[in-house]
Each structure stands twice: as C-alpha cells, then as structure tokens.
Length: 211
Image (cartoon, rainbow, N blue to C red; front, side, top):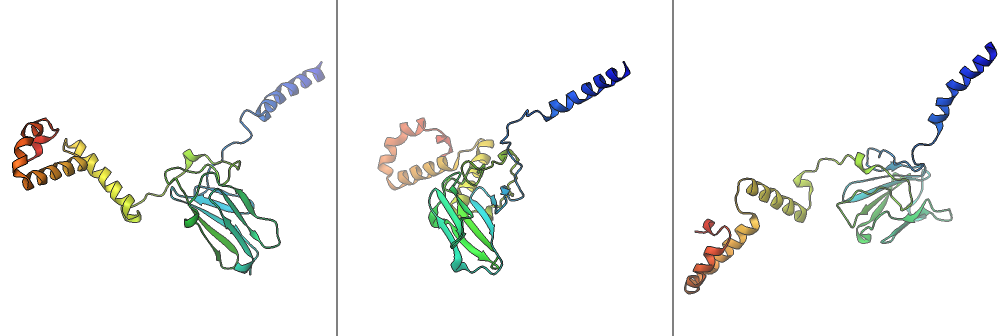
C-alpha cells in the first residue's frame, strides 16, 4: 500500500509539469527588439529608426570591397561575397528608396548598410517578409530634436506646434492668419473692391481679428 501511495504522489506532482511544458503560446512569438530597435541574427544584425534601417554583416577580416556583392532593389536586397552563397537574400518588410540606400566596408571586417524607408512613419516588424518579428510595442525611439530634422519636416513640426498653441489659446491657426493677411493685403490694394466685400467680411470666421 505504501508503494502505491508513493506512485500516486509522484504522478500528481508530475502532472503540473506536463501542463507547463504544453505549448500555450504561438511558436512564432514576437521578440523584444535589440538596442537598435531590430534583431541580432546569426549572420547579421539590423536596427532602425522611423526614417532608416541599418544592417551590419560581419565578413572575414581583410575582405576587400571588390569581393563584396550588394544589390539594392525597391523590394529586395542581396548581400554576399563573390563565389560564395549569399549572406542576405530577401524581400524587404516594406519598401525602400533605392536611390537613398548605401553600403560601406568598415575596417575590412564588416559590411555596413543603410536603407531609407519609403514610409517614414512606421516601425518594421522584421527586416524581411516572413522573418522573425519583433514586438514593435517595445521599440524605444531616441528623442529627436528639431535641429536633427530636415528643413521640410522641421517646418511642418513647428507649424503643428504653433497651431496647437494657438488652438489652446483660442486664437486663429497659421493657415487662418495667412488667409486673413492675404485678404487684408488684397483689400488694401483694391480699395474700391473692398466696399463690395463688406457683407462677405461679416460672414467670414474670425473676421473680428482683421483690422
């Protein structure tokens, strides 16, 4: 009887372990991104910002650039060494601007690749379609400064910030101020026609802001 009881005890203690080992989550679980917001793979590593994707591919020390193959296309990338199997060969997770993609050989031991994203407002879940995905909810973008932005983006951000402040203060937006200034200038240049705008002026929003 004692032996049977021990067997029963052993079977009851093993049961929870079997439950723990049973797969309760999908096999393709999303991984936590590396410090560069990408992944460290066996033959390469990649990272990203909202604007760009960077790839680092180690090669044998002393490798010459003339032996390196890097082929950029709008949807695919091929990287390798001549007369050897390709190291990278896949379809981008999303499109890139081929004219703004570059590569260089660093210290004759690593290929450094820069890809410019077509859509600069999305985080890539993986480098290639069908590849291991990262959890984009855990991406940690670096705080950007206005001085780091290009002229066009900086102007757009400053305009949004100005409009937001104006809205909070109950004042007209930059576009409304621009329209008011244009109308005011037109009326000053055409005083005779200004009289005809009298009634229309009263109907315009924010007309009270005009002198």
